[in-house]
Length: 234
Length: 234
Image (cartoon, rainbow over all chains, first blue to last red; front, top):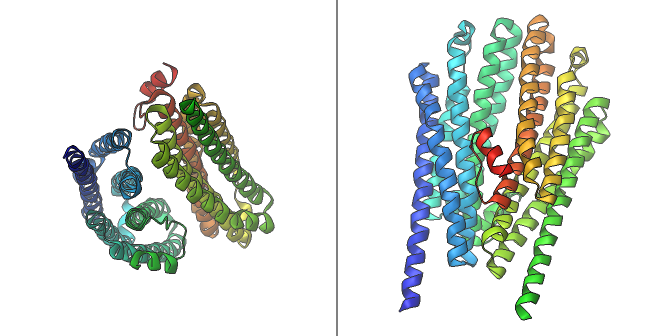
Protein backbone atom coordinates (compact mmCIF):
# COMPACT_ATOMS: atom_id res chain seq x y z
CA UNK A 1 0.00 0.00 0.00
CA UNK A 2 2.83 2.36 0.87
CA UNK A 3 4.61 1.40 -2.37
CA UNK A 4 1.46 2.06 -4.34
CA UNK A 5 1.17 5.45 -2.72
CA UNK A 6 4.77 6.31 -3.47
CA UNK A 7 4.31 5.28 -7.06
CA UNK A 8 1.15 7.37 -7.44
CA UNK A 9 2.92 10.35 -5.96
CA UNK A 10 5.75 9.79 -8.43
CA UNK A 11 3.24 9.68 -11.28
CA UNK A 12 1.78 12.93 -10.01
CA UNK A 13 5.29 14.48 -10.00
CA UNK A 14 5.86 13.38 -13.59
CA UNK A 15 2.46 14.65 -14.71
CA UNK A 16 3.06 17.98 -13.03
CA UNK A 17 6.47 18.54 -14.59
CA UNK A 18 5.17 17.47 -18.02
CA UNK A 19 2.35 19.98 -17.73
CA UNK A 20 4.88 22.69 -16.85
CA UNK A 21 6.83 21.83 -20.02
CA UNK A 22 3.62 22.23 -22.03
CA UNK A 23 2.90 25.52 -20.32
CA UNK A 24 6.37 26.81 -21.17
CA UNK A 25 5.93 25.51 -24.71
CA UNK A 26 2.60 27.31 -25.04
CA UNK A 27 4.22 30.56 -23.98
CA UNK A 28 7.04 30.16 -26.51
CA UNK A 29 4.56 29.25 -29.24
CA UNK A 30 2.59 32.43 -28.46
CA UNK A 31 5.84 34.42 -28.52
CA UNK A 32 6.68 33.16 -32.00
CA UNK A 33 3.13 33.78 -33.25
CA UNK A 34 3.33 37.35 -31.97
CA UNK A 35 6.81 37.87 -33.44
CA UNK A 36 5.41 36.89 -36.85
CA UNK A 37 2.45 39.20 -36.27
CA UNK A 38 4.87 42.04 -35.48
CA UNK A 39 6.64 41.29 -38.76
CA UNK A 40 3.39 41.21 -40.74
CA UNK A 41 1.98 44.40 -39.27
CA UNK A 42 5.28 46.18 -38.49
CA UNK A 43 3.87 46.91 -35.03
CA UNK A 44 6.56 47.94 -32.52
CA UNK A 45 4.25 47.44 -29.51
CA UNK A 46 3.78 43.76 -30.39
CA UNK A 47 7.52 43.39 -30.93
CA UNK A 48 8.15 44.92 -27.50
CA UNK A 49 5.73 42.49 -25.90
CA UNK A 50 7.64 39.53 -27.38
CA UNK A 51 10.91 40.95 -26.08
CA UNK A 52 9.45 41.51 -22.59
CA UNK A 53 8.39 37.86 -22.28
CA UNK A 54 11.91 36.48 -22.63
CA UNK A 55 12.62 36.61 -18.92
CA UNK A 56 9.52 34.58 -18.00
CA UNK A 57 10.58 31.82 -20.40
CA UNK A 58 14.13 31.86 -19.02
CA UNK A 59 12.87 31.51 -15.45
CA UNK A 60 10.62 28.61 -16.45
CA UNK A 61 13.62 26.81 -17.94
CA UNK A 62 15.60 27.19 -14.73
CA UNK A 63 12.66 26.17 -12.50
CA UNK A 64 11.72 23.08 -14.54
CA UNK A 65 15.35 21.97 -14.76
CA UNK A 66 15.74 22.24 -11.00
CA UNK A 67 12.52 20.27 -10.50
CA UNK A 68 13.85 17.62 -12.91
CA UNK A 69 17.05 17.08 -10.94
CA UNK A 70 15.11 17.13 -7.64
CA UNK A 71 12.81 14.37 -8.87
CA UNK A 72 15.77 12.30 -10.11
CA UNK A 73 17.56 12.68 -6.76
CA UNK A 74 14.43 11.93 -4.71
CA UNK A 75 12.79 9.19 -6.78
CA UNK A 76 15.82 7.52 -8.34
CA UNK A 77 13.89 6.65 -11.48
CA UNK A 78 15.02 4.13 -14.08
CA UNK A 79 14.03 3.16 -17.61
CA UNK A 80 11.26 5.21 -19.19
CA UNK A 81 10.74 7.52 -16.19
CA UNK A 82 14.42 8.48 -16.20
CA UNK A 83 14.36 8.95 -19.97
CA UNK A 84 11.33 11.23 -19.61
CA UNK A 85 13.12 13.41 -17.07
CA UNK A 86 16.38 13.56 -19.03
CA UNK A 87 14.45 14.38 -22.20
CA UNK A 88 12.50 17.11 -20.42
CA UNK A 89 15.75 18.69 -19.27
CA UNK A 90 16.86 18.90 -22.92
CA UNK A 91 13.44 19.79 -24.33
CA UNK A 92 13.22 22.92 -22.20
CA UNK A 93 16.62 24.05 -23.49
CA UNK A 94 15.21 23.79 -27.00
CA UNK A 95 12.09 25.68 -25.97
CA UNK A 96 14.12 28.43 -24.35
CA UNK A 97 16.24 28.75 -27.49
CA UNK A 98 13.11 28.91 -29.64
CA UNK A 99 11.93 31.76 -27.40
CA UNK A 100 15.31 33.47 -27.94
CA UNK A 101 14.73 33.22 -31.69
CA UNK A 102 11.28 34.83 -31.29
CA UNK A 103 12.93 37.66 -29.36
CA UNK A 104 15.56 38.02 -32.10
CA UNK A 105 12.82 38.26 -34.74
CA UNK A 106 11.03 40.95 -32.72
CA UNK A 107 14.24 42.99 -32.34
CA UNK A 108 14.97 42.77 -36.06
CA UNK A 109 11.40 43.81 -36.90
CA UNK A 110 11.99 47.02 -34.97
CA UNK A 111 15.14 47.72 -36.98
CA UNK A 112 13.46 46.90 -40.30
CA UNK A 113 10.71 49.42 -39.48
CA UNK A 114 13.27 52.23 -39.61
CA UNK A 115 14.60 51.16 -43.02
CA UNK A 116 12.63 52.59 -45.94
CA UNK A 117 14.12 50.08 -48.40
CA UNK A 118 12.68 47.16 -46.40
CA UNK A 119 9.19 47.72 -47.80
CA UNK A 120 10.42 47.14 -51.35
CA UNK A 121 11.42 43.54 -50.55
CA UNK A 122 9.01 40.63 -51.03
CA UNK A 123 9.35 38.43 -47.97
CA UNK A 124 6.62 35.90 -48.79
CA UNK A 125 8.93 32.95 -48.00
CA UNK A 126 9.60 34.30 -44.49
CA UNK A 127 5.89 34.51 -43.76
CA UNK A 128 5.29 31.01 -45.12
CA UNK A 129 8.16 29.49 -43.15
CA UNK A 130 7.11 31.43 -40.03
CA UNK A 131 3.66 29.84 -40.18
CA UNK A 132 5.29 26.46 -40.73
CA UNK A 133 7.55 26.96 -37.70
CA UNK A 134 4.66 27.85 -35.40
CA UNK A 135 2.72 24.84 -36.65
CA UNK A 136 5.63 22.41 -36.29
CA UNK A 137 6.38 23.59 -32.75
CA UNK A 138 2.72 23.26 -31.76
CA UNK A 139 2.65 19.73 -33.18
CA UNK A 140 5.88 18.87 -31.35
CA UNK A 141 4.27 19.95 -28.07
CA UNK A 142 1.10 17.96 -28.87
CA UNK A 143 3.21 14.91 -29.70
CA UNK A 144 5.09 15.36 -26.42
CA UNK A 145 1.80 15.56 -24.48
CA UNK A 146 0.59 12.32 -26.07
CA UNK A 147 4.07 10.73 -26.40
CA UNK A 148 3.11 10.09 -30.03
CA UNK A 149 6.13 8.76 -31.92
CA UNK A 150 4.40 8.62 -35.32
CA UNK A 151 3.62 12.33 -35.06
CA UNK A 152 7.21 12.91 -33.94
CA UNK A 153 8.56 11.17 -37.05
CA UNK A 154 6.30 13.34 -39.24
CA UNK A 155 7.70 16.48 -37.55
CA UNK A 156 11.27 15.46 -38.35
CA UNK A 157 10.19 15.00 -41.98
CA UNK A 158 8.39 18.35 -42.12
CA UNK A 159 11.34 20.31 -40.74
CA UNK A 160 13.04 19.73 -44.12
CA UNK A 161 10.37 21.88 -45.82
CA UNK A 162 11.23 24.84 -43.58
CA UNK A 163 14.92 24.43 -44.42
CA UNK A 164 14.07 24.46 -48.14
CA UNK A 165 11.92 27.59 -47.77
CA UNK A 166 14.90 29.24 -46.06
CA UNK A 167 17.32 28.36 -48.84
CA UNK A 168 14.89 29.61 -51.50
CA UNK A 169 14.60 32.91 -49.65
CA UNK A 170 18.38 33.36 -49.40
CA UNK A 171 18.71 32.87 -53.16
CA UNK A 172 16.00 35.46 -53.80
CA UNK A 173 17.58 37.87 -51.34
CA UNK A 174 20.92 37.80 -53.15
CA UNK A 175 19.14 38.78 -56.38
CA UNK A 176 17.32 41.66 -54.68
CA UNK A 177 20.49 42.97 -53.09
CA UNK A 178 22.45 42.82 -56.32
CA UNK A 179 19.71 44.61 -58.23
CA UNK A 180 19.41 47.36 -55.64
CA UNK A 181 22.24 47.73 -53.13
CA UNK A 182 20.10 50.10 -51.07
CA UNK A 183 18.24 46.97 -49.89
CA UNK A 184 21.39 45.34 -48.46
CA UNK A 185 20.91 46.44 -44.83
CA UNK A 186 17.25 45.47 -44.76
CA UNK A 187 18.09 42.26 -46.63
CA UNK A 188 20.52 41.24 -43.89
CA UNK A 189 17.89 41.91 -41.22
CA UNK A 190 15.42 39.72 -43.10
CA UNK A 191 18.11 37.07 -43.50
CA UNK A 192 18.54 36.99 -39.72
CA UNK A 193 14.76 36.71 -39.28
CA UNK A 194 14.56 33.86 -41.81
CA UNK A 195 17.45 32.08 -40.09
CA UNK A 196 15.73 32.46 -36.70
CA UNK A 197 12.61 30.79 -38.12
CA UNK A 198 14.65 27.99 -39.61
CA UNK A 199 16.21 27.39 -36.20
CA UNK A 200 12.80 27.27 -34.50
CA UNK A 201 12.03 24.39 -36.86
CA UNK A 202 15.27 22.69 -35.78
CA UNK A 203 14.28 23.02 -32.12
CA UNK A 204 10.88 21.44 -32.85
CA UNK A 205 12.68 18.62 -34.65
CA UNK A 206 14.98 18.09 -31.65
CA UNK A 207 11.96 17.87 -29.33
CA UNK A 208 10.39 15.31 -31.68
CA UNK A 209 13.56 13.20 -31.50
CA UNK A 210 13.43 13.25 -27.69
CA UNK A 211 9.84 11.90 -27.81
CA UNK A 212 11.05 8.85 -29.74
CA UNK A 213 13.84 8.44 -27.18
CA UNK A 214 11.40 8.57 -24.25
CA UNK A 215 9.01 6.00 -25.71
CA UNK A 216 11.35 3.67 -27.61
CA UNK A 217 14.52 4.06 -25.57
CA UNK A 218 16.56 4.70 -28.71
CA UNK A 219 18.56 7.84 -29.28
CA UNK A 220 17.65 8.74 -32.87
CA UNK A 221 19.70 11.92 -33.11
CA UNK A 222 22.05 11.80 -36.10
CA UNK A 223 20.28 8.74 -37.51
CA UNK A 224 19.10 8.65 -41.11
CA UNK A 225 15.50 9.61 -41.66
CA UNK A 226 14.66 6.02 -42.66
CA UNK A 227 16.21 4.59 -39.49
CA UNK A 228 14.41 7.19 -37.39
CA UNK A 229 11.05 6.35 -38.97
CA UNK A 230 11.57 2.62 -38.53
CA UNK A 231 12.28 3.26 -34.85
CA UNK A 232 9.31 5.61 -34.39
CA UNK A 233 6.82 3.26 -36.03
CA UNK A 234 8.19 -0.01 -34.57
CA UNK B 1 34.30 -1.91 2.99
CA UNK B 2 31.72 -2.81 0.40
CA UNK B 3 30.41 0.76 0.48
CA UNK B 4 33.90 2.10 0.05
CA UNK B 5 34.44 -0.16 -2.91
CA UNK B 6 31.17 0.88 -4.51
CA UNK B 7 32.09 4.50 -4.03
CA UNK B 8 35.54 4.02 -5.60
CA UNK B 9 33.96 2.27 -8.55
CA UNK B 10 31.52 5.15 -8.84
CA UNK B 11 34.41 7.62 -8.77
CA UNK B 12 36.07 5.61 -11.53
CA UNK B 13 32.85 5.79 -13.59
CA UNK B 14 32.70 9.55 -13.15
CA UNK B 15 36.37 9.99 -14.03
CA UNK B 16 35.97 7.84 -17.12
CA UNK B 17 32.96 9.70 -18.43
CA UNK B 18 34.62 13.06 -17.72
CA UNK B 19 37.67 11.98 -19.68
CA UNK B 20 35.41 11.00 -22.59
CA UNK B 21 33.89 14.49 -22.55
CA UNK B 22 37.40 15.94 -22.73
CA UNK B 23 38.28 13.59 -25.57
CA UNK B 24 35.18 14.66 -27.50
CA UNK B 25 35.99 18.29 -26.72
CA UNK B 26 39.55 17.84 -27.99
CA UNK B 27 38.23 16.47 -31.25
CA UNK B 28 35.82 19.38 -31.68
CA UNK B 29 38.57 21.87 -30.82
CA UNK B 30 40.79 20.29 -33.50
CA UNK B 31 37.90 20.45 -35.97
CA UNK B 32 37.45 24.18 -35.39
CA UNK B 33 41.20 24.80 -35.64
CA UNK B 34 41.28 22.96 -38.95
CA UNK B 35 38.18 24.76 -40.23
CA UNK B 36 39.95 28.07 -39.57
CA UNK B 37 43.08 26.71 -41.27
CA UNK B 38 40.97 25.76 -44.30
CA UNK B 39 39.67 29.34 -44.35
CA UNK B 40 43.15 30.86 -44.06
CA UNK B 41 44.72 28.66 -46.74
CA UNK B 42 41.59 28.03 -48.87
CA UNK B 43 42.51 24.35 -48.82
CA UNK B 44 39.63 22.08 -49.87
CA UNK B 45 41.34 18.93 -48.56
CA UNK B 46 41.45 20.35 -45.03
CA UNK B 47 37.83 21.46 -45.34
CA UNK B 48 36.87 17.92 -46.41
CA UNK B 49 38.66 16.46 -43.41
CA UNK B 50 36.63 18.67 -41.05
CA UNK B 51 33.41 17.59 -42.76
CA UNK B 52 34.36 13.91 -42.55
CA UNK B 53 34.87 14.10 -38.77
CA UNK B 54 31.30 15.15 -38.04
CA UNK B 55 30.02 11.61 -37.70
CA UNK B 56 32.64 10.66 -35.09
CA UNK B 57 31.62 13.61 -32.93
CA UNK B 58 27.93 12.73 -33.32
CA UNK B 59 28.57 9.16 -32.24
CA UNK B 60 30.54 10.33 -29.22
CA UNK B 61 27.60 12.50 -28.15
CA UNK B 62 25.19 9.56 -28.33
CA UNK B 63 27.59 7.18 -26.54
CA UNK B 64 28.42 9.58 -23.70
CA UNK B 65 24.76 10.48 -23.21
CA UNK B 66 23.82 6.81 -22.96
CA UNK B 67 26.62 6.24 -20.47
CA UNK B 68 25.35 9.22 -18.45
CA UNK B 69 21.84 7.83 -18.12
CA UNK B 70 23.22 4.35 -17.37
CA UNK B 71 25.30 5.73 -14.50
CA UNK B 72 22.32 7.70 -13.14
CA UNK B 73 20.08 4.59 -13.28
CA UNK B 74 22.73 2.31 -11.73
CA UNK B 75 24.29 4.58 -9.12
CA UNK B 76 21.35 6.80 -8.21
CA UNK B 77 23.62 9.75 -7.53
CA UNK B 78 22.59 12.88 -5.65
CA UNK B 79 23.97 16.36 -5.09
CA UNK B 80 27.21 17.16 -6.88
CA UNK B 81 27.54 13.77 -8.61
CA UNK B 82 24.09 14.11 -10.12
CA UNK B 83 24.80 17.70 -11.15
CA UNK B 84 28.01 16.55 -12.84
CA UNK B 85 26.14 13.92 -14.87
CA UNK B 86 23.29 16.25 -15.82
CA UNK B 87 25.78 18.95 -16.80
CA UNK B 88 27.78 16.46 -18.89
CA UNK B 89 24.63 15.51 -20.77
CA UNK B 90 24.15 19.17 -21.72
CA UNK B 91 27.83 19.93 -22.26
CA UNK B 92 28.13 17.28 -24.95
CA UNK B 93 25.15 18.79 -26.79
CA UNK B 94 27.06 22.07 -26.85
CA UNK B 95 30.22 20.31 -28.03
CA UNK B 96 28.33 18.53 -30.80
CA UNK B 97 26.79 21.81 -31.92
CA UNK B 98 30.22 23.48 -31.90
CA UNK B 99 31.39 20.63 -34.15
CA UNK B 100 28.41 21.31 -36.45
CA UNK B 101 29.54 24.92 -36.68
CA UNK B 102 33.07 23.79 -37.65
CA UNK B 103 31.53 21.65 -40.38
CA UNK B 104 29.43 24.60 -41.56
CA UNK B 105 32.57 26.78 -41.76
CA UNK B 106 34.35 24.09 -43.80
CA UNK B 107 31.43 23.81 -46.23
CA UNK B 108 31.27 27.57 -46.71
CA UNK B 109 35.05 27.73 -47.26
CA UNK B 110 34.58 25.37 -50.21
CA UNK B 111 31.91 27.63 -51.70
CA UNK B 112 33.98 30.77 -51.14
CA UNK B 113 36.88 29.17 -53.03
CA UNK B 114 34.78 29.16 -56.20
CA UNK B 115 33.87 32.84 -55.87
CA UNK B 116 36.44 35.19 -57.41
CA UNK B 117 35.03 38.20 -55.57
CA UNK B 118 35.74 36.57 -52.19
CA UNK B 119 39.44 37.40 -52.39
CA UNK B 120 38.73 41.12 -52.57
CA UNK B 121 37.16 41.09 -49.09
CA UNK B 122 39.18 41.73 -45.95
CA UNK B 123 38.07 39.17 -43.38
CA UNK B 124 40.53 40.06 -40.62
CA UNK B 125 37.77 40.10 -37.98
CA UNK B 126 36.73 36.55 -38.88
CA UNK B 127 40.27 35.29 -38.37
CA UNK B 128 40.61 37.14 -35.07
CA UNK B 129 37.29 35.88 -33.75
CA UNK B 130 38.08 32.35 -35.01
CA UNK B 131 41.26 32.31 -32.93
CA UNK B 132 39.31 33.67 -29.97
CA UNK B 133 36.67 30.93 -30.35
CA UNK B 134 39.28 28.14 -30.42
CA UNK B 135 40.96 29.62 -27.37
CA UNK B 136 37.73 30.09 -25.40
CA UNK B 137 36.59 26.53 -26.12
CA UNK B 138 39.97 25.14 -25.06
CA UNK B 139 39.79 27.13 -21.83
CA UNK B 140 36.22 25.92 -21.22
CA UNK B 141 37.43 22.32 -21.52
CA UNK B 142 40.38 23.02 -19.21
CA UNK B 143 38.04 24.65 -16.69
CA UNK B 144 35.74 21.62 -16.93
CA UNK B 145 38.69 19.26 -16.31
CA UNK B 146 39.69 21.21 -13.19
CA UNK B 147 36.12 22.28 -12.25
CA UNK B 148 37.55 25.79 -12.02
CA UNK B 149 34.70 28.27 -11.49
CA UNK B 150 36.92 31.38 -11.60
CA UNK B 151 38.14 30.37 -15.06
CA UNK B 152 34.53 29.66 -16.03
CA UNK B 153 33.47 33.18 -15.02
CA UNK B 154 36.31 34.63 -17.11
CA UNK B 155 35.10 32.63 -20.14
CA UNK B 156 31.59 34.06 -19.84
CA UNK B 157 33.15 37.53 -19.77
CA UNK B 158 35.40 36.84 -22.78
CA UNK B 159 32.54 35.56 -24.94
CA UNK B 160 31.34 39.17 -25.16
CA UNK B 161 34.50 40.11 -27.09
CA UNK B 162 33.71 37.51 -29.77
CA UNK B 163 30.18 38.90 -30.08
CA UNK B 164 31.59 42.41 -30.54
CA UNK B 165 34.07 41.22 -33.18
CA UNK B 166 31.12 39.65 -35.02
CA UNK B 167 29.06 42.84 -34.98
CA UNK B 168 32.03 44.90 -36.22
CA UNK B 169 32.46 42.47 -39.09
CA UNK B 170 28.79 42.66 -40.10
CA UNK B 171 28.99 46.46 -40.25
CA UNK B 172 32.10 46.27 -42.45
CA UNK B 173 30.49 43.66 -44.66
CA UNK B 174 27.49 45.88 -45.39
CA UNK B 175 29.87 48.64 -46.55
CA UNK B 176 31.78 46.23 -48.83
CA UNK B 177 28.60 44.87 -50.36
CA UNK B 178 27.17 48.32 -51.02
CA UNK B 179 30.40 49.51 -52.61
CA UNK B 180 30.65 46.46 -54.86
CA UNK B 181 27.52 44.33 -55.28
CA UNK B 182 29.62 41.60 -56.94
CA UNK B 183 30.82 40.76 -53.42
CA UNK B 184 27.30 40.06 -52.09
CA UNK B 185 27.36 36.28 -52.57
CA UNK B 186 30.80 35.89 -51.03
CA UNK B 187 29.84 38.36 -48.31
CA UNK B 188 26.89 36.21 -47.28
CA UNK B 189 29.15 33.13 -47.12
CA UNK B 190 31.55 35.01 -44.86
CA UNK B 191 28.63 36.23 -42.78
CA UNK B 192 27.60 32.62 -42.19
CA UNK B 193 31.18 31.73 -41.25
CA UNK B 194 31.39 34.67 -38.82
CA UNK B 195 28.05 33.68 -37.29
CA UNK B 196 29.26 30.08 -36.85
CA UNK B 197 32.30 31.35 -34.96
CA UNK B 198 30.17 33.57 -32.78
CA UNK B 199 28.02 30.54 -31.92
CA UNK B 200 31.08 28.45 -30.99
CA UNK B 201 31.82 31.16 -28.43
CA UNK B 202 28.25 30.82 -27.12
CA UNK B 203 28.68 27.06 -26.72
CA UNK B 204 31.91 27.60 -24.76
CA UNK B 205 30.07 30.10 -22.57
CA UNK B 206 27.26 27.57 -21.96
CA UNK B 207 29.82 24.95 -20.91
CA UNK B 208 31.38 27.48 -18.53
CA UNK B 209 27.98 28.09 -16.93
CA UNK B 210 27.51 24.34 -16.38
CA UNK B 211 30.86 24.23 -14.54
CA UNK B 212 29.57 26.79 -12.03
CA UNK B 213 26.38 24.74 -11.69
CA UNK B 214 28.33 21.54 -10.96
CA UNK B 215 30.56 23.09 -8.31
CA UNK B 216 28.26 25.67 -6.70
CA UNK B 217 24.88 24.02 -7.28
CA UNK B 218 23.47 27.25 -8.69
CA UNK B 219 22.01 27.52 -12.16
CA UNK B 220 23.60 30.75 -13.44
CA UNK B 221 22.04 30.69 -16.90
CA UNK B 222 20.19 33.95 -17.60
CA UNK B 223 21.73 35.63 -14.57
CA UNK B 224 23.45 38.99 -14.84
CA UNK B 225 27.19 38.89 -15.29
CA UNK B 226 27.69 40.37 -11.82
CA UNK B 227 25.48 37.74 -10.17
CA UNK B 228 27.28 35.00 -12.11
CA UNK B 229 30.68 36.24 -10.99
CA UNK B 230 29.62 36.52 -7.36
CA UNK B 231 28.42 32.93 -7.54
CA UNK B 232 31.56 31.67 -9.30
CA UNK B 233 33.93 33.33 -6.86
CA UNK B 234 31.94 32.68 -3.66
